[in-house]
Image (cartoon, rainbow, N blue to C red):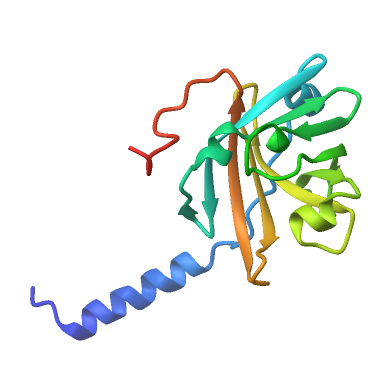
Amino acid sequence: MKVTNFSIIGLLVVLLNFTSCKDSKTEPYKLPSNAIELISGNDEKVWKLAKRLNNNIRMNMGDCFLSYRQSYRMDMTMNDNNSEHSDCGESLNAKWEVVQNETGNSFIKLQSNQLPKLMNIEENYKYFQILELTEDRLTLTFQHKQFSDKIMWIKDFYVPADAKVEGRNFHNK
């Protein structure tokens, strides 16, 4: 059987049409029913940043990222520990809640008068979409307007503060 360029192109057209017939919408992540407890523990849960992607490019985990922790509490308050470390900036203190949008995506909504300054935004609230939530993992994504006014998609991968994570400082070896 002789294969011609025409038959290869025809096959590719058929395959592309077949695969493009799929619904391109992805189903929203189904949040566990105990989401609040998974985020905050029984009273307080401290999460550390295991990895960060900036527009799908892995970021260097410098000192401030390596020491960064977020504490979520059952009383629906949270804070980070930035101010505890030299040159890491001001700590955020906020109220938090879990909300869902009209398409079923779940978010952690932080509310604080510090957010406009810390996140370079106008509002005193910020939504962080929950991509995964288990006892040992919290994955969030959000848009961040850099100080150059360039908007980037950030994806943060959190683990409990006492978890061991291989390669967190992959650029610092």
